[in-house]
Structure formats: structure tokens, C-alpha cells
Image (tube, rainbow, N blue to C red; front, top):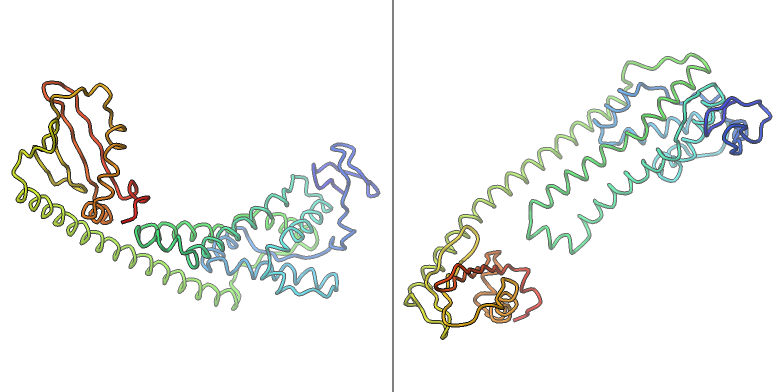
Amino acid sequence: MNCIHCGNRLPSDAKFCNKCGKPIESVKEINAEHVEYFSISLLRLAVLSVLTLGIYDVYWFYKNWDAIKKQEGKKISPLARAIFAVFYCHDLFKRVALSAKNHGYVKKISYSFWATTYIILIIAGTAMGQVARDNPDFKSLASDYPSLVIYFSVFQFIIILSSFIPLLPIQKVINFNNDSIAQIHQRKKFSIGEAILIVLGIVFFGSIILSTYSSLARFNTNNIVQVHSKKDFINKSVASVKTNLNLPYRVDEATTLVNITAESNAIRYHYVISGIDTSDFSNAYLKDYLRPTVCQNKDIKNILDQDINIEHSYFVEDTRENYFISFAKADCLQYKL
């Protein structure tokens, strides 16, 4: 018998490890020493899990719990334990580790770590799907930033596909365990059930790829149209203001508006300051000073709501002083008109 924690060889009646000092959990206590678990190569497990988008993981858990049920004769439901694997994976991984250790597996088996990793991946993937489907804040954010939905979905997809990773080290131990018991050979041919799962997985996988590609193409098309529409709006707005104002336009005794230009994502006002002390000026000071005036202007607020910034560029006459401030939609959220 070997210590499950450090792999140290122990006498069969040992209660504590004489190397690491931890209590010994004997596999005989759970009557699982001769369970012949589900044999499959690591590559095969990984490929089948990915091709079926994690559905094969449920089958994997089912086969292993079914093997335990047949060996121990317990009244358990392998299917229920497979479907709700997050609640039973730690128990399964522990059984496998104890059995392998008692058959001479000397390497450390971090079954708790891999069980926890599997649980985290499953919960994270499920939670992300729940957020995308039911959270109103996410839906609101997604409406403003359509690309967020695509990137979020891809990330969720990667997490779901990664669920097989914690199963691989456990499968490696299972294969050692089974080989020690009965020289069980790993199947090379696909079963009918596996073939059906692969076909369904490929169809589902293809539909997701197609849906993601269509969403991305639609987003790019809408984005191009939006960019052109926004650019046209900026140009028309600048032309309209210039028509209504005779530039240069005297704003007050110290400030003169000399030009208005259309930028890629903003309308920029160019000012010249003269005849006042600007020693206390800074970008932050000017932004705080102008914020109420800008944000409480209905026309400007409508422009900001279209994700078009309002920029102010200031040059102090006869000096090299210049200041630049920019107002975005987020700068005026606290102001309700």
C-alpha cells in the first residue's frame, strides 16, 4: 500500500504515513481496489470531448460510476452522478487515486486539485451563459458594444471546451489502475454511441462557428455603416455650426472661437485665449469648469449620446501654452436633461 499524499510505500496495517505523517485512507475502506474503470487513451478522450463540446465528459463520468456500481453492488445512479458531476467528481477522483496507489502508482495524484479545477470550469462556463442570457446590465452593455457579445461567447466557448483537461491526469491513473488489475486494452474503434456523439458534436460545433461568423460579419457590416453615418453626421454638424457663426467668433472678453473641425470621432472647437492670467489653468481645471455647461446643453448631450466626443483645444495668445480637453458620453452620465 502507498500513501495517497506522498507515494511512500507503507505496510498494509499502517494508520499514518511514516514519511509525511498524514493519516492513511485505505482504498479497502471504500471497497474499490478491483474496480475496472473506463479505459480510453488520453488523446482519444481529449478529441471526443472537444468534438462533442463536453458532452462526452458526461459519458465518461457515467461509465466510471457504472463500473463502480457493478463492482460494489451499491444502489447508486451512474447517470445522475454523471449529470451532476460537479457534486461527485471529487469522490470519483479520490477513489481512482486510492485504487491506483494501492496498485503501486508512485507519483503524486492531486485529485483534489483536478476535481476543484473541473468544478470551476463547469461553474464558470454555466455562469457566463447565465449572465449573457438573463443579466439586464450585460444586455444593455452588449447593445452599445456588439463586439463584446462575440468576444464573451468565444471566451465562454474556450472555457467549456477546456473541461476535459482535469480529466486527463485522472484518466492516466485509471489506465495504470486497469492495467495493474487485468491488462485491460484501450479500445481503438469508436462505439456506436461515440460515433453518434461525434456527429452531433460536429453539427453543433459547426452551427456555433457559423453563428459566430455570421454575427461577426453582421457586426463588421453594421460597424462600417455606423462609422460612415457618424462621419457624415460630424461633417454636417461642423458645416452647420460654421454657417451659423461668423468665425472668428468672440465668446467672451478673453476667449475667441477661431475654428471648428471634424475629427474621426469628435467635433473639435479651437479657441484662442488672450488678456487674462492663465497660471492656474490646467486640462483638469478647464474640464471641471466647462463640464456643467457642456453636459447640460441638450444639443451637445445628444451628440455625446451617439458616441461622438466634443473636444476643446485652447491656445494662449503670444505664448506656447495650450490646453486640450475632451468630453465623452461617460463624462455626462450624471447629468439628466
